[in-house]
Length: 180
Image (cartoon, rainbow, N blue to C red):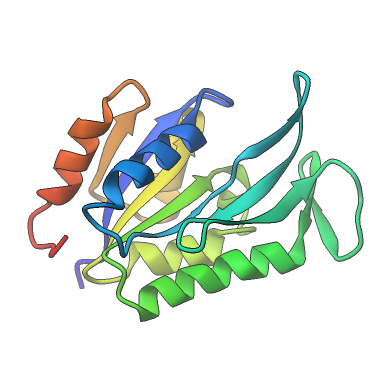
């Protein structure tokens, strides 16, 4: 089993990984309208990040993902409380992408919580081992090597945020052995 082709887009905290993934999606979707997945844009109040939403890339719908305030049906991870319903929704999106044989799936972001076996851990593991799929995931640079080790990723294509979108999309569209 070969598993998915994996592109890891890495950058520092609040450097623009989510924005870059959104821009890649908007440039890629006219070429590959069956691209699926989700990104997690931050919610800001002045200079303070107060939470995250989950943006379903297929339906373009926003779902509250995390907040700094304890809310019903949430669980604590780091400084945030994650909405269980939205985490479940994101995991269902991944399973649906696999059932639909989506050729490209975007996941934002894989990091500390996934390294601890939480949030998108199981979904990311499924995607990494899926056949005929290209996975694009955002990863904080400081977690890049740990993510590769944790998920046994032997050959990834890693891009920093400074790489232009055309280069990344060209790499994505020319990956050997994939019908992208």
